[in-house]
Length: 262
Length: 262
Image 1: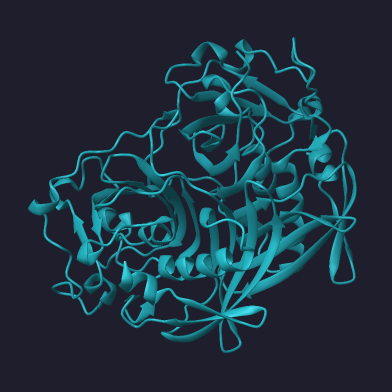
Image 2: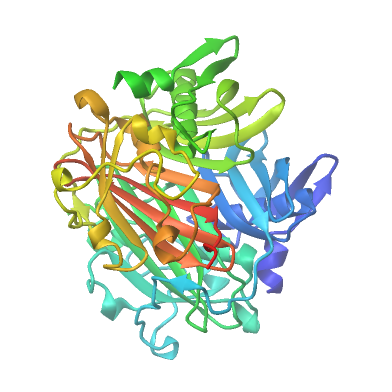
């Protein structure tokens, strides 16, 4: 996973960290929200120095940064035996862009859980689905990050049930997913509002991801579901299974949205 | 709602706030986590001075405070037209206990949503269910907060499906629920692990609540579901409908748990 880990690298400078937001991991020229959360997680893990994996990550999105240098301020809130908790804030120039709270711990490789309610949903075979292009036909929006990984959506399954998108995510060159890149995966699918008449504009207000196991090698199976659409806000659930059909992450997101012009 | 609003009152002192944690809103002598989140929300709303309702609330729980005085530090992260975002931290003496991030806005009274995937689940009629007592038979645990509101669990429905508890929440004296007290309601049910062999010990690491509408008068219908139980951690979903069967809040929680002794 050289490309993703390189693009989310942080450097400690005094009490804080610096990072360089990569112009390749962007949507419409702006760094993706899950990508920013992964960068904050790397700083949180390094600052705590106790636990390698994000168990929970909750972020509020304040102002979208541009590609380029950012600074990250970190405060370790609690250092415990089984978990530590950390706040991290990403700023660009004098503008605070994202603030997040993390619970860090040690995840097991995905094994058999004691109990789970979420069976892996059906998705057409990966090789039968086309990767989503970074330049969608008929729109001006460039999703440059789609040149950095493979997103395959099961378009034939859209509408069954309504408000849901299912598909696959794969990193290039056989690279494996890990607990930090799962934070990105939880925000790497199109908004499910897209299946309900929404246009592509869905700025995230809040994103919470629970990482539940270290994923096995191979692609991720993703289900993105809309829950409730009020006039201007939607909450979505994103569930992620590894190639062994084990739940590895569950996420929720509150976002603004707009309906497409008729 | 005099009792709850009184028990969550905050007083501005300089740049911060003070509050008095009420010994009545406790579980095993410790203030409930949703109760603490509601207190932080009141401080966040007052500090922002722009938007009255929490739209999202995400908290990490660091150290459980005792009943008694606490201080609350608040930082307004962003003031926007449709939403503002705020961080709030609750401390007791020199110990940081809870830190939370809020998105604030203006909620509509629950109306017909544009789209929703979550129909209100069946629950036995409220009058056919007994209020949960504050002193459960056969245990030493006192849940004092259960003398402050009515929690009625549909025990006959437990196991259908597994990992799920459904029931009602009602405030005394005909008091109505509001967006801030919904933050409490999202943590007012027993852990769903209880239905899967867990004991009552489920300290919360992270709690995220999305408040989606102002509830109509009357009781709340609640569904608490376990998702995935790994060896020591569980994530749960709590969904809340108002008396008109409209979704008013959706929450997730990551907690530690233990299995009951055999």
